[in-house]
Length: 80
Image (tube, rainbow, N blue to C red):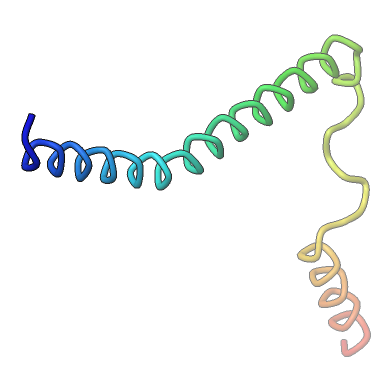
């Protein structure tokens, strides 16, 4: 193995090392996201098994659109 082969091997290993350093954080992030998604899915399944599904999933607080519509109706009644 002469100097040219050693330089080529060193260059290849350097490029491979840089590639690993660039890709590794992405792979760690993907693994973390999958783990979080799995925990969320397990929590939802556990909640469904516990019977929480019987209660209403909708909020009891009126939405902003409902408040706006109620305000418009009351103004209309006052001005009439």
